[in-house]
Length: 438
Length: 167
Image (cartoon, rainbow over all chains, first blue to last red):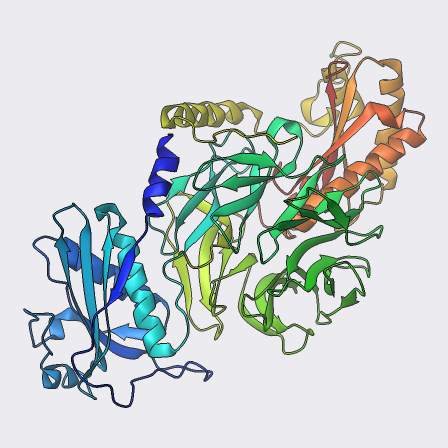
């Protein structure tokens, strides 16, 4: 099996979870209200997990970095810690944590099992109530230690916010190298925090706009292979690849339906128009959803699969339209200044993210699904192509500074106040977020 | 219909390919846009691809978000059609391009619209449309890199690329 694929398989290795019974009865629970516009980050102490080596510290660092990057948590500086945790099974000295204002405390331990697997345990404590909020243990292969850390960060996030986390996820994107005139683009996949980058194509063919299946470890993307730009599917676990349909012209802008059984895309036609088609991947039948002489592209399904949002210049400049999943009743929903492109329906169903061009700026924003309530979250010389974290709370996109054509990946949350760059080995564009891994 | 293959290749191959690709593009960086840039008018062998590029002009330019064939472009395409009718053995591909001031998917479609408009114009000049293939590169193949209109306008183009017959 090729190296790339073997590495992926290892990363997909199952992590077994069991609950550790709470040592104290539950009382009123510590909870961060993230429904308000402005959230004061919750101070949380994340202690180094006990282990015979560096691994415990490494796991704690990944958990702390995940929580910090969300903008909802403020990990307390380890130098301020008073109590040194020597027995993570015992209740901590809550006073020692309250005095440094750590509202929540995370303790844990990593041990190597006889069969070579890792066992990682953690407990989450409410220091002011003096009680355990959560406790779980995980068994996994040693190379999946980062994944375990992300799973623990997700558990903490969910317990303290009441919403699902998004840390145990991946991002597929386009890695860019070479000069701007002769750019080499490769498909790459990484953990959401930028770690574990792996390449999925070798750079020989121009590849663009990868998109994750919402239901399995599969991506769809566009490739110029053989001089004929078309849409492909790639199974991440096996490396199997296949062409999606064999159309007379170029196909662009693919995206999966929520059940992963269809791919919607645009076919570029002889007369210069672009129309939206959906292909059923099981029956291989194709349905035409739009029939105009305009450019209709960038289609994205609602999470219930009943509607499709897309961009069209049928009214002049590109604007966002919504229609039934069968192409019925298209109606324009964007009416602000400038033009609107790359609409993406939120996995929660409540919002549509977009790229807006106005006044020489490119912005990332969200609107309600009827087009009202537009909010701009990020603006710059060139911010483009949002993709949603599976919990519908964070967006990733690519940003290009003027002149340089050196794109990089950025995340922003729905408040617009927490903008973070994701470090990648090379230039990076066209990110697409995976669903939460199973 | 279905085609399966493993996509992973050896990292050595990738590295080798990349170094070759990077080395190979340096010399092409300043491709002339027209005969005037080279000062070589008339020196190319008649009927050669160099003759086409230098003495006819292989590219036309477009206004922002537009695929309308401008008056200056009409002149170039009329000359192209004349030349291509005289040398019927060349296969013809029209590449449509967009500037970077648009989103990727829209630019791919806009490049196709420009390529289609160019083909249609060449056909109106008596060239069989069936002889002309089109492809769009969107904003993936800029000739000029900067952050001003002066170079975006160079990137909004359609290039008529010649190949050997039947290719």
